[in-house]
Image 1 (cartoon, rainbow, N blue to C red):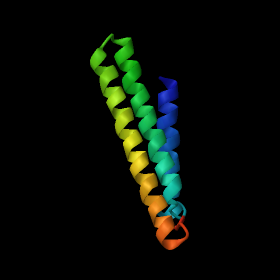
Image 2 (cartoon, helix red, strand yellow; image 1 turned 60 degrees about the horizontal axis):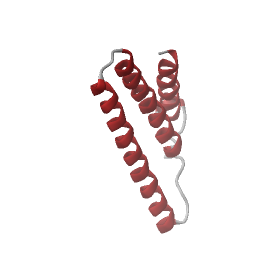
Image 3 (cartoon, helix red, strand yellow; image 1 turned 180 degrees about the horizontal axis):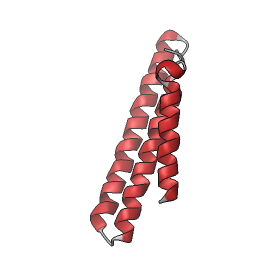
Length: 93
């Protein structure tokens, strides 16, 4: 439980630092922060399902992990194609 809250807080802090007036926006760091938050939420769902002997929580956790993996693959594909076209990645927006 503490690990999941820690992961969510770390991801949220990373997202806040990398967006808005506190710093320049870095696309890669934003993706990583969002992935860390999703990992924390997924771990919380899986642990809750395991503690309550609820198979539905485990199934939802696995589905969220699959969707997160697909989202990461699509984001990285977009970045790779952008790099192929432009020759460099804009890390700061």
